[in-house]
Image 1 (tube, helix red, strand yellow):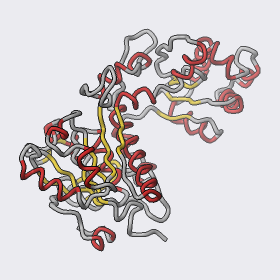
Image 2 (cartoon, rainbow, N blue to C red):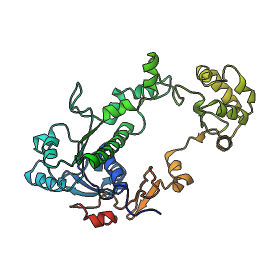
Image 3 (tube, helix red, strand yellow):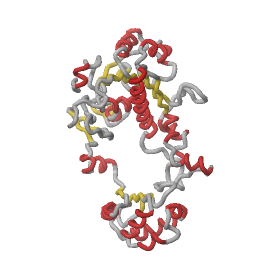
Image 4 (cartoon, one colour):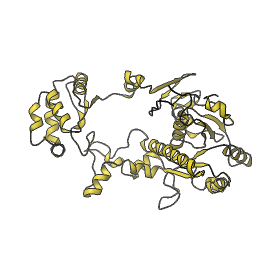
Length: 381
């Protein structure tokens, strides 16, 4: 049986962050049952204007990051706004913020001041580069951090230039790291009774994404290079042409390679010394790709994917976003959420058997105070 309470029911989160990493963290905590109050400046979160498209003047970008929160507006530069914030902090378990380092301290509401007053508070800061060091306190944005941490240098076609990953991967991973940090701090608080400062920096998160390129460089010092759709260490792990649409083939071991060769009518290829082992296939990838695509030119791409998957070879069609969101398995996995008022969004990817995620508050739901404990536990509004 499942419980109407999420895994984080009873946890109160004050989300005073803006843009992506912090709000994404807050949305995930809210999806799993936390009571999340989002406090925005009088003009609102910047991402309300990041469109089109817009609905009632608010951009889709904002809607995608601010579900399961109730929203109000405060001006922390005023004494009245700071007093209202302190009243909310007194009831909160977690505070999420991404103000520029020193801003809240100048207002007298920084971590040192508030942690002394509220010792159980878990304070989560999403920052660009951390507070100190050569880049400390500088503003950080996803694309700039992709550029600086080497991500762009290894993304793109082999004969092309550095390329930004086509989604805000650093911001989103930073949000995920913030969630992990909050959960770790809450777990430790169960033992010590004390909160702590949690920081998730875009720079650190960007560097953390460099596997296996960093591991390769640490081992032999060779500069990682762009390989297009192909994996730098294993092959075939690439988008390959067929007689119709390209398909992505992800061969991770010798057994899968032998199955691929049988499916496309080249069983002897699996015994060729040039391709028999994973290391050999990686070294001789150019010639292997030519042979595979020559054989696959007689196949319908979609039909070949089904044949390969049935044979235990990981393969996939290269789908556009709309097709991926409308795929029957997307519906089966409950990865598209619909709520009253026309909201649709991506569902929670983490599935829990007894305390699954729930969707209680559409974006822009107003809220001034945390819910009473009984209402919060029941998922009320």
